[in-house]
Image (cartoon, rainbow, N blue to C red; front, side):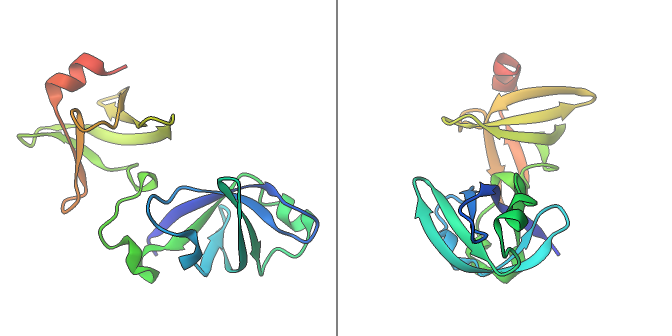
Length: 164
């Protein structure tokens, strides 16, 4: 099963088992998802209700019956199976960057992505280059994704200038 983390449960929301959810889906409406997998143990669950909540969502799931149940999923991920939803056909989500190889334009291996953080203006990609990890912003003049090969292509000279 190729899982994609689509959201994160932040905390309980109310006494009936709803949870406040942060969604990380660019251009995909959260409402298309019905079958999801909760937490690190990936418990199969069905979404029964979704309500917008100031940039977040309040979500009811069939496996969470109370505020106490909801508390056990605080700060836990929500996954879906990529193959269950055709909305992912031409999209690589930032949660899938981890493990992708980074190569130069001429095919030379640079390293592998080990972490991704979003600081608002751009994702920051951490690349392990032979034991040393560097962080670079995911901006067009430095990094691009080759979707067909699922690798990052990096402008190596630019990388050397801006890496931290």
